[in-house]
Amino acid sequence: MITDKTSYHDYLKCDLKAYGLEKLSLYNYFRMDNLRFQRQLRKMEYLHNCKRKNPVSRLYLFILEVINHRLETRLGFTIPKNVFDSGLCIVHHGTIVISPKAKVGKNCRIHPSTSIGDYHGAPTIGNNVYIGPGAKIFGNISIGNNVAVGANAVVNSNFPDNVTIGGIPAAVLSQKSSIETGVYPESIFKS
Image (cartoon, rainbow, N blue to C red; front, side):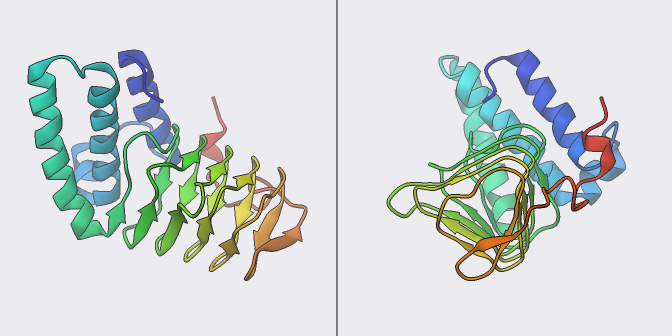
């Protein structure tokens, strides 16, 4: 969670790294709508968590929420504040629906047509998790670190670290982690 200006800048840096970028150019900012949405989301998280009492910041937050809602609607996203940790990569636009009660760790790579829902509790997802296109994750469950969730998987039970899961309902397909399957760009893990 973004708690101060330093953590805000760290989040932005990690998010850029997840996209394989060192710096954000004006060209990339306007070409990559999902990255622009994500940067505005991080700004809203910072204002919501750190500048709540300042009336000017509250007004700025409201304006950002209106602007981001329009972009969110156009891209098909429903992603609330303070759900994703740093290093989020939204591969491209399409329907992505996330419960505000869900918690997702660092370096999550998420594809379109994905839903992380609230059904008798929301999921807690670990670090370095790859979520394939069309995956549905719901319920009061826990998914470990370094897990790859296959395309169109329906995940409604707990899974340990370092596995690949898929199917309806999801089951362990392989003992390979998301890092071993190569679904992340190497730049994420370089210091």
